[in-house]
Image (cartoon, rainbow, N blue to C red):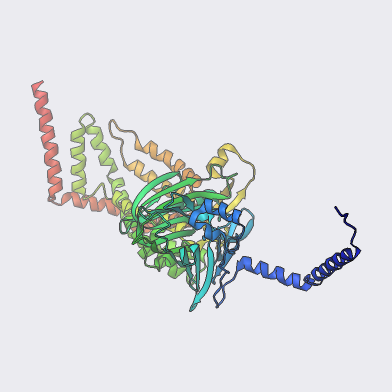
Length: 632
């Protein structure tokens, strides 16, 4: 075999070719300016901003490696197509108007961030924008069951975004594709200056991909961020509300964990005291599984989240496709806004059931809204309280008048009790006869108090629901929707912290003092007027104890409540005390009442049917007792 010799010419040729290639690579290298421009373009692709033009992503598959394609195909089946597109990146598209900013992720196609503009979140001493969704605290997921027996989750798959404009509206479609014209689509429509989005879920060309013989489960989850100063107070009003079977509404317990199954559901609201996230549907969900978990075990430690809400609802196929038109709301839990949509969303707010809610919706909210339109909120509460007490003053008058009449009759009632000490039935007969002759109704003092209960309870629900009080200051209170700490401490004092937290609210203290003097004026007189009955506890002693216990209970209860509510009760009780002093000293005179009672006694009385029936029953009972005694 001939020995190969070193070919110097070939060596020179290869060296020249190698050098030329190296020179070409070097000369084609981008400049610093070109590199900076390219980096800027890549960053712009990660966050797509709304424009008037259509925003699209190149849809041709980019994964060309056959091994990688096989692995994706094995895992995702028909949905492997979506993983090969340029949109298969964890980037977001921004939708933004004057009141709301949303970021929707390619991965999962759902909202990853929701920021409410114009409001601040208060967490201890720090302030930041109110963000209902951030850092993966919320998910929207469709459980996809395919014909080849795969179970996939849309939250783990990549959607292709397309942003357009329809007039002033921004329209974002997120498509999870199995081919050029086969996809699952989420469609978001943001309108100017609106918290409510149009939202739709539909499929196209997936009849041979998805198992359409049974519904797909839509899962919605949210861990609610703390946004207010008092985590315990905020958590008390953080709850899951839903509407079902027409216009019925219900909620999962605000304080405890809970699960519920509801049928024919039209909306689900994850309410966070003064803000809320709502999912509405035109096509009602047939059966929904709802769950609420309380995340606050210790308010000194658990200060990031309050509740975790979960809802699972079936989406049914029609002619092999999904077609659901929905709405999403991210914004304030404010009556005027929610009620303005005419979708029964005002029920999300805990205004009370029955007559209590009626009073709040049609009286208190309009009246307070009118007053606060021209007065600062603190003064508006005071003016509103004065107005309520003036309207209720006739009831207060009747109540006090009844107490005064009973006080005048007390000596005669005591005499009857002593005379018939051993005969309770006779004692009762004589007492009723005295009331009838004197023209006094012993229940007249209770009825006015019962009439005030609807107003009392309605106001108890009204103030915690008033969004307008949020972060509005008055005197020493910096937020009328939360407590006003005149004294606070960092250390955990076992018994004290359990009762009052780590602060003392001055408005709560003033309300407790006012209720003490009010009870001293009213309860004391009632105790004196009510003689002890045989076999019954001495109510006078119980009432005397309650004079001191009730204000303390009120202090502990309202110490963490909204200072606006405590301000109302302080002013209300102070005004009531003033009204009663005026009634006692200038309107109701005991000597005049005594003279009127004596005059009533001298007049012939005609029994009412009820009084006649009661007298006959007592006489029959007395006769029966006498007959039994004779037999013995």
